[in-house]
Length: 287
Image (cartoon, rainbow, N blue to C red; front, side, top):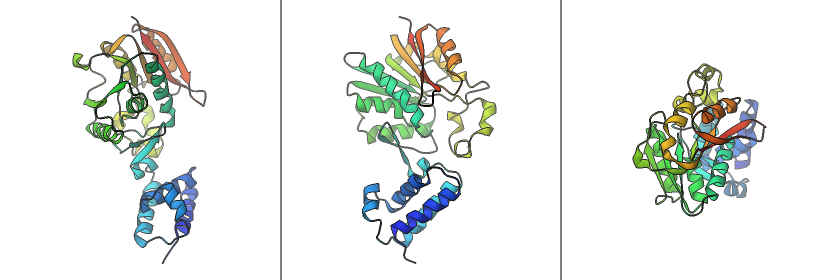
């Protein structure tokens, strides 16, 4: 039976809303755009027109996946970060608004350095933090390091997407092992590492624990394994006076600050997100 885009949108929104999905209005629009391969502007333009059976079936399939708990970003295959689009997949964490603070603070530090600068994005995932800096700061080059082949594939795709092939590169590397000297040194090292305590993983929301990669979530018994390892092992990758910026979990800022203080970092400070939660911890390598 023929159905208009408007009716299909309303039907999808109602199904999502009934399932308790808070952003049902936005997600219904995004699902319909993905199914119809239209931009939001094109959807609004055609909203009163009849759709096709194929688009209706694709919308219902995407809706079913969302109702099963799969994050909307994975359904769409891309997500926005700092206003820029990034390819996403279950191989890496979905870029989050909380992490935009990490990117913004990193860019603020890079702007303090005259001339060309280098940023290292460790545990890069999609590469969104390092690539945002390179995309918005024309004198900055980015190196993205991750252990996951799937994440590195996303990094490569996002490098191409933002036309940064000449100024960004992705490399396979273990954050818990010392870096190769061939990497050189960086003005800023940013890292959003795995920081969920192992015992807390089972209590995470289904959309996270069943769909996002465990490798990017499990931070060890107390959630601090990566902060300890990186702070000690990756100092050679920072220039003297270089900035190390971490995203941290709720209640971890004090412990991460102490780890930095024990490892030759000074000027340690914590930055709060819009919810008043300590979200980024920064230290400057003693020069």
